[in-house]
Length: 420
Image (cartoon, rainbow, N blue to C red; front, side):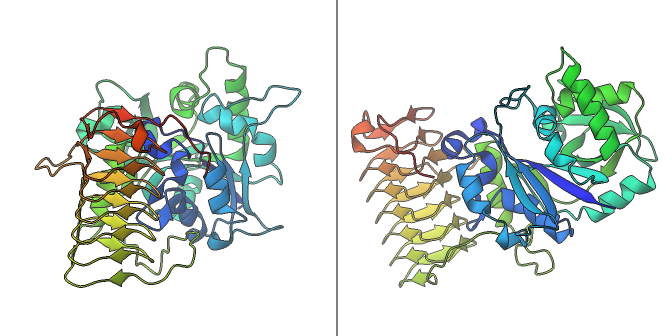
């Protein structure tokens, strides 16, 4: 049984704000040393699926650079699978920017069906979870399904964000509603689809010809398949899964990793999350610092008297003497100046937080207002960025209207750079 995985990795991720100003959502760093895409890619290879296609669109450069030839995932294969990345292209016939998830698959279908795979596993590249796809494939074959979708129970107050299902005792899908205002249940579609090749070919061609379609699996393809009585089944998944599509959910997923025990064990040698990393020196700790319940990556330097509490530091981060970082995610090569305070914040790559600056605020709320600082930006000495404020990419001293940026404000740079 030949299975080909297709990962949809073109999301703009606008709800992540400044974190996706220069990169697609699957390329956003996660848990210090990883990218979001690493979890789906690692799920594939850990499930012994080595034939993987990525469909990219929005700002794919960081993603392409990160994946390269696929070596870290054992996907640098020329003749027996491997990883290939596809982006939108212009041709003499119908092709252009992808209109929806189904259209992204349809436009690349000549490549997807090449060499005649039996099953097509369609995945999202912007979810954090560890899932063995082999039981899903067995479930699909045992139920003689045309299509199987993975399902998970979500909090009832979040159910309206998802496609919601009702299934029979044999797991056949009886009803499917995409993002209902009043959800009838909390059984949600995870965006993990397994199709028989012939079925996918047929339903995508019909969808392409439908003039009233938005060419999306959840909005159009699956509801039409339900009406036509295809054999659609819901595979129950009970592990940890989160769509890190907002700054709040992205922050919360990091806080989850710092729990004891964490919902995903990054030290599990039987299910390694593979990634591309560069050589960095070991972590260096000075004297009298306080580090509590935090993740520190290679190359970090924590200077005398600094405190790092319930936070995640990417490679090369320096925390200056007397600085305090709490409930925050700090990306690669950031400098947090001496006596600076960083609370409940996400700070992107190569940010310089000046001496005595204050970023964010402590909060008793379970989900506080998150402060975002964009890549390559500067927070000047003794400036204050209030909780819920946002500093865009490449912001420098002259871009600030005052020394205090209030909640809800976003400061943008007059000039920007074009780095990855």
